[in-house]
Image (cartoon, rainbow, N blue to C red):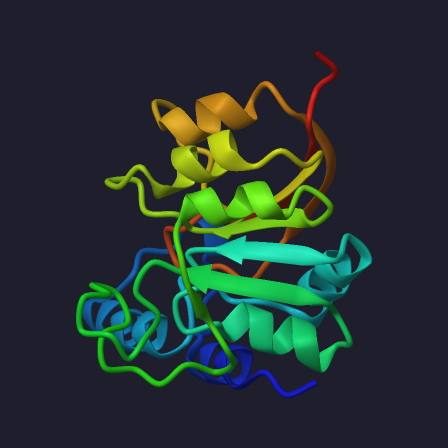
Length: 190
């Protein structure tokens, strides 16, 4: 599977005796991260993370941005529908404006999820300052959510996901100072 984001991330990773979780992002690494996030995605996918997502397919991704994770999932033989309110290169997309998508990303918001209760909802770093993540979780009628992000206290989405049962977790490559992981959660019985 081609994964140029992981390759660029690994090639640029600093060698240090300091454990990864304690390293700080230098200004140069911050600038590199901003460029790679715009081109690829907020989180760095690994082969193992993609395989886990494929096992939980079919998937529907909301807030897909450039569609990078969807592109990798499709390379791995997975079935995914990718949506973003403003798919790139749309200039209204504040994170990926002007970037070319890696695969087809359909225009649409959280209401589209009501059409896909048979698919696992995939959310990768939904913006904390926008309601998209919460709206997606509320509109989704299915039973499984895959979430990539940090679990910071005080996040309304994280608080909502705390009510779901974690069925799998996986470490993914992390930028210095970032504690994101992949979680697969099942809706609690009502």
